[in-house]
Each structure stands twice: as structure tokens, then as C-alpha cells.
Length: 186
Image 1 (cartoon, rainbow, N blue to C red):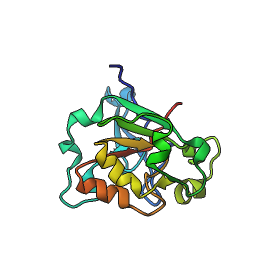
Image 2: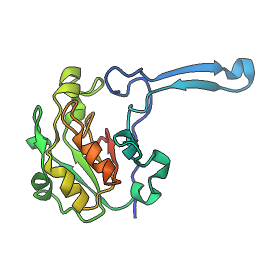
Image 3: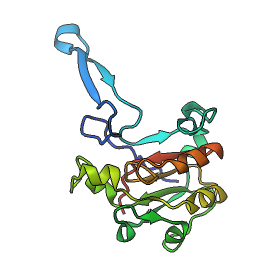
Image 4: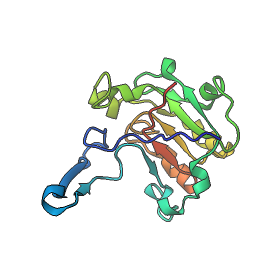
């Protein structure tokens, strides 16, 4: 099995959740003066490529260290939905299944093309990126649970419609997690 690293570089240019403190790096020791380089890093947990643990949405849900390692790698599919995504569009199980075969337990990555509107994307539009992005249709919840999809990701700021969080709450209760901000290359 070939493994792919889906992480984005972590730096001050990575899009972050609105109103959260930005990523910050300060040198506290420099090699010339102290013989070593040391940095102080401050960030929120909602920046760049990251995984939301079920506890993010559900009190008593699994914490990040309780997620089984086996959930974080394995076979998966990338679904290119860019031709169907517009402001506030909803992606559905039918859209996904019409393009790829999703097997039980797959890792599912959705390419919406919305990352282009991020602050450092090719067509920056922060308002559109944060408040008008596509999201999951409510039918996605049961479909993801039925397919035993433990990990799924998108190339946008959230898997849900702006400021509406049902996917995380329902999947958290089902002991499933999801990851955000995956830039797929299709």
C-alpha cells in the first residue's frame, strides 16, 4: 500500500478558522548566540490540515489520542465534485457514488475546489471561503455511518454549511471523526 501525506505546511500563511488567533512563531534562542535554534509556537487547533476529534463536538467523545491509529491510514478515494459545487451547494451520497465506488471503511476525500477562495488561494475571497462554502447534505450522516467511513476530509474550511455543525455532532456520537482542509490533487 502506498501512503500519501495530506498535510499542508504549517505557517502564518495557512487559512485558519475565523476569529481564532493566527499562527505565530518566535525565535527564543538563535544558534549564533545560544548554540541552538529554539522557537515558541502559538496556534489554535483549527488551522491548516487537522483532524477534529469526536470530543470537539460531543462531550465525552473520543479525544485525539484515543482515535485508533488504523483509522488514520488505509485505502481511500478522492472524489472530484468541483463541477457541481457553488455557493452553499450541498454534496450528497448520490453525487459521490455516481463518480467513484466507495467501499466500507474507505478514507473519503472530497475535492470541491473551494480551497481556491482561501486567503492564500488562487482566487482569494475570504467572505466566500468562510461564509458561502459548500457543505454536506443531511443524508451524508447516515451514509457515512453505514459505509463505516472513519475519516473523511474536504478542501474547504468545514464539512458543514457555514456555522452549522450537525455532521460533527452526529458522527461524534457514532464514534467517528473527520478531518478538514485537505487539498486534493485530482
